[in-house]
Image 1 (cartoon, one colour):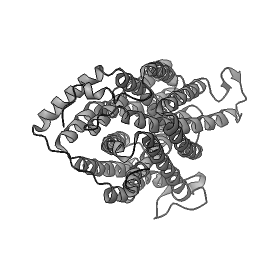
Image 2 (image 1 turned 90 degrees about the vertical axis):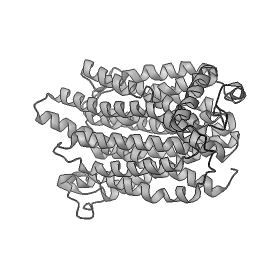
Image 3 (image 1 turned 135 degrees about the vertical axis):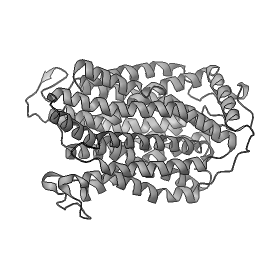
Image 4 (image 1 turned 30 degrees about the vertical axis):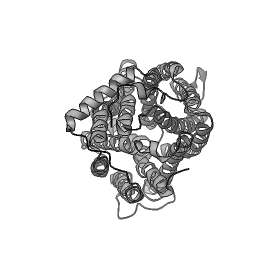
Length: 462
């Protein structure tokens, strides 16, 4: 790696600091806990069992949909404004504060369901803040190394983040999360006087995420320094003109346009797998939250290892082959998930107490973690190969747009299919088609990017 090592390590600490929100919050602790409490609440209101499960998945998808739409519309504007004014760090600090407050608020998701909507809103706000902070962090990636080194740096950063997710999950399981009998998996009562009957050992996940972020962002703010860009006059109006010019240039850059279009679909589908994997396990396979926590450990460890390996392949062969391979894997995973219940898998009947569905879903979790992590890191690397050097924050704002412009689509389609078919399992069907569409669009993406073209595009001058 070139460049000051402390700066690279400081930049990578962002992934470590924020990963618990996704590992513990989105996928393995809070998301399934939310689905379980929502289901119990709807059952208590007199809903039939299947309808209650479908409604629980639908409102979780609603939160993801609204948050995704907000990120899609506001992300590129924020990036353009930051590049135009030359001020990025104040935005990162501001969104970090929002992230910490919103994460802490997850504590109030009490078992009686009275704070269901408050908690959904708090989680959605935290998710938006995390994604906006990521835009400003990703904008620094192009300055950390050469084209050949960026893939490995991105992969190592994402891998470090997943190891952070693994460690945070272990801490939650060993010392906080209530297993059977109100004890943790090593037989301890939740610390600090937390009430197991009130699920406080689970609800502490919100404050835990917030404190983890505060502690592990210290290296970032100590070691990551950015040379301020010239403050161009015009403020918001100038930023909007710059953004308009950049959007117009995308149409004239076929490789970039194809990549952003493809990533729009495969990242949307991947995020839906993260958001609904644990929910699916609760509603379809009747897993306990402890089962899901083990599932999380398997997926997070696989993600950490596979992402590092993917980064090395990226540095050697480029990001495009890594992206293609992992989309194929994830398409296969979705097909298996749709074709599996407790009593059959892909049409093959099973005994009601068969261990096969559980084993297969653990394998699916490993595949989702490994392929998802490698896909995320390679996507950042591919975006660097399409990034104008004077507009990195705006470029990653567009990258966020491509990841969120249709962010409502996968959750909305899952919610729609779940409602129409009254089946959380069949609600996953749209993801198969979204992954296939993304794979088709990649055929127009140049493996080396299009940096030889941006000089001729109508991008704003620095």
